Image (tube, rainbow, N blue to C red):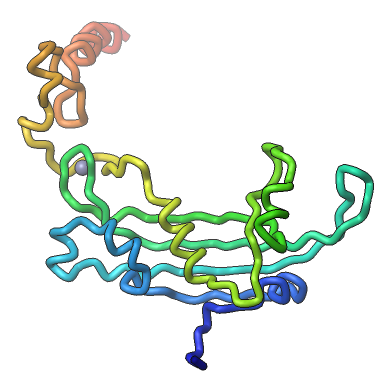
Length: 200
Ligand SMILES: [Zn+2]
């Protein structure tokens, strides 16, 4: 049981000495992220995302609410990289950039995490360990960084069947305004403006 694992750290020591660690992790090493990849991308073997991570420990003296001095330990974890997701508008896979940075307050145990006052300004508690698995936290942060409803900013193509959808059948609405088809009102407004321009 002496397999080297670069991701296992003594988190208390990591914070106390202000250590910084960073690296790249393959998508394949993150089983819960792998399940988020659209099936057709997995099948094609295109899902070769690599995520960059950076962890920084810190320790600072603070004054507690009761006026007692204490030493608080922190961990800041940054994760970023591209991830294949399925656009919920046009249902095609696309690569979305994930990017997150979170600072945690390291606490010694679960009880300490639960004892903390509920304060909006309070940092998220992270239960430390002498054998803390950074990889697990990296995956957790990437999962949290996934968009709830992944969507292209602008879909490359939208099928008519998807553009109208069931809403379109229930309630015939005016054609949606999109980049390809300027709205008739905009065209009308342009016509109204043009005599002014010509008149000057
Ligand atoms: Zn789309």
